[in-house]
Length: 273
Ligand SMILES: [Fe+2]
Image 1 (cartoon, rainbow, N blue to C red):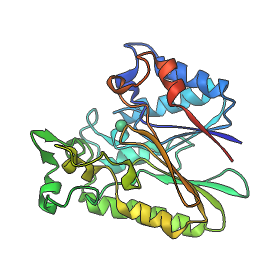
Image 2 (image 1 turned 90 degrees about the vertical axis):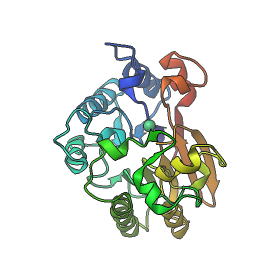
Image 3 (image 1 turned 90 degrees about the horizontal axis):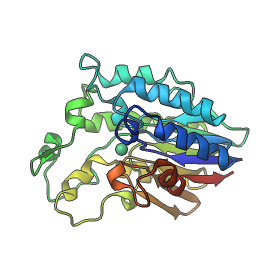
């Protein structure tokens, strides 16, 4: 079976105005590569309704099932200031491939477990104090989850909730082969290299070391750990686990072309199980 992996397609920024550029390109590429199942690791758009309709459209264009975990952007309430992140999180579960509702069993052997994950500042440089990370503001820039991702909890508490949920599901399925999907990054190899003028600080909001510890605890079980968020395209192996971060990212960051089909062709990755 061939599984396609991509994240951070940010269609509200990347689609040519009034067109469905990303949907058309990705739908075609999923078909052309003979993909059987697609995994999208979050950040489709800044509006949950846009994200939901994208996911439905990708399934119908490509003809394959799509699995999804929300990213922080999908949970932003810019367009719905009255809604908190929990309510948007539940709305996104209307999509049947949203694996935050339940793990997805590919077959007897393989299961896909995933969730947003969150950050606990453990990837930030220790030259900053915890209270400074809580402000989510540095050098004139604000990390926008502070404004738009309204969980009503501290970042560390949100992280703890998702970490515990994932941990329980992994324990329940430890006799299977697991594909673990988070939006946030699970390992420090994915953070922005330091020292860096601003990322020494902003790396704090990329993920948590607890996820790599969790992967290390189940070295024969978690075969893949897939993430997005940092807008990198990078893979490495840790024992039996392949870690994959495969973001399309914003058009300004595209590496090969400003044309969606070409850039997604370079980005899109498939794994064989
Ligand atoms: Fe993103």
